[in-house]
Length: 278
Image (cartoon, helix red, strand yellow):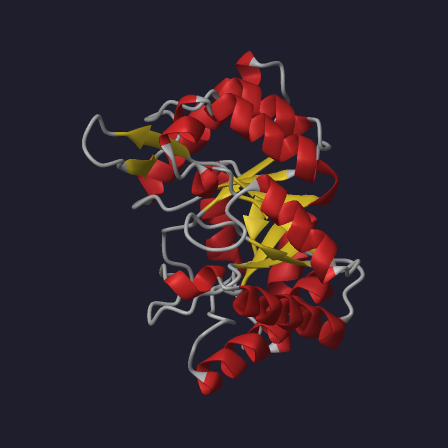
């Protein structure tokens, strides 16, 4: 498997960025500039990545392609197309976004997020983004979220079928779908179900951890790997079964030091499970 994560130290050029990547011992990376970068800058980073045997797991979008405001929704979809074109250019495993929200907050919860008409709009938007770029080396993908489609592996599989495009893949964030006590206490079984249903379509994975408070009502927190209850040895076996270049990214940590701690924890769990982190 390939391990990557955030780079919290500042950098001004590929050499400075690579210094931090090497210190973190990443073998997978999120592409460090977006589609607004000068083409020569994109190529400079790509040369460094290829020269150091790094796999580009993701190009991010993180825009609301279901915004209730038409101008914002159009701008988000246009940016998604540009980011997917960048992912195709650099042969990233995927270009990833969330499906979007009808909330005033781009990633927020709203009753309308589950309306059939909004689902149809999401499918049409995803098709439009993919059809505009027609990716071959990369694909567009959706990160699951706790309060919008898809929030279960079954629903994600249905989304794959409804989009019905070869250029659509799965970005697996199993922690974001652990949104109830049953999935929390049966996390290994739930995560195994995710891999069983979605394995052929998975292009990249977010690796996090969860902790639930013994309080009313349910409070489930995302935490640093190793600070929660997930069985990482079993999870990493599922990741490795997808292939040695499968990318597994740590995210949402506050500092370079915490990323180093989390990466060391994942490497140790992999070692104990007999898995090689390339």
